[in-house]
Length: 382
Ligand SMILES: Cc1cc2nc3c(=O)[nH]c(=O)nc-3n(C[C@H](O)[C@H](O)[C@H](O)COP(=O)(O)OP(=O)(O)OC[C@H]3O[C@@H](n4cnc5c(N)ncnc54)[C@H](O)[C@@H]3O)c2cc1C
Image (cartoon, rainbow, N blue to C red; front, side, top):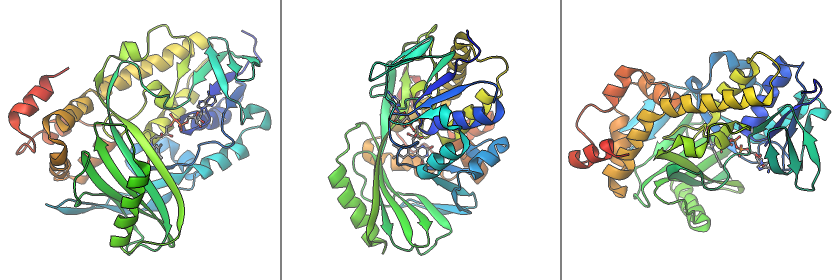
């Protein structure tokens, strides 16, 4: 392997860009090339996360993304409303784009560079250009069907309105006191600035179909009911995978010579489909690896990391089976309302994917929110 060959990261979205930022900072001895097919890094997303989702040692990286921060957040169900003194944050992808352009040397990235093929020792661009690499990392994000994985979906349409929220220091992350349609439905309300509010109509659904126009109309109604109508500034849509089960070996066969990060590598929270915290964590981990980032070793490391993540998510897959298989779609809200009886720190560990054994027992204790027979069948299922 020639010492001047770069590590090539394919995909300058959340995971690829964060890894590139940390590698540039911590391993300036390793040449790097970040290839992004779009005309900016990160697309047009709002990524939200709890403080406890990200490792403390990455505080500087997160701060450099200028998150909007709410010191408290709220959930609401027909049966209970609760305010939790746990901070919630959102980062807009424009901040990631600006940070990458500012921090990476110009020779370390290319925009409008669409990769057609990834190989062990390089990539072929859509125009036919071939670039040699010491290692290739696939960070292309969701690529349609994820082979071998049994999935449900968290899907949403969000509109950012020019409007002012009554409580600008509080994020409403779930207001499920709504007609329950297409699974578990809730509205998400984030006061992004004194004069901007993001309202999202969200569904935990069996289907990935997203009727964008219909949902956008519902968002407008939900905003109007909350006195938040105004000029529409932007719209975003998402269809995020929720992991029910599957075969990790089929999803990512052993011996695959290409490393992976982000959703391309299955690095998402099984119950929320979110990946901000994991992307930060993996950027930390990859930049702390010793050695010269030779392709085979890097591919092995990332696959072993995925297998560990798969194991860590076992309990969450089990909960997902209860949610999607034991609860009728219009009764799924009961599972979340029941969950929100728990202490705030336990809830925070749930979202961070870092549950203790006591947490696991406590989450499943109490009067079951779903029929017991169906719950047992779901728990024993594949
Ligand atoms: C609208 C939306 C909102 C979300 N909100 C949250 C949230 O609040 N919190 C959270 O944790 N998660 C959220 N998620 C889920 C998840 O965290 C994001 O999808 C996240 O961006 C995934 O990171 P990634 O790096 O794997 O993929 P992406 O960020 O999608 O990045 C993949 C990149 O690869 C590029 N690419 C693809 N193919 C090629 C190619 N052939 N050649 C070169 N480049 C290529 C793409 O253009 C893209 O920039 C959201 C997702 C969506 C869609």
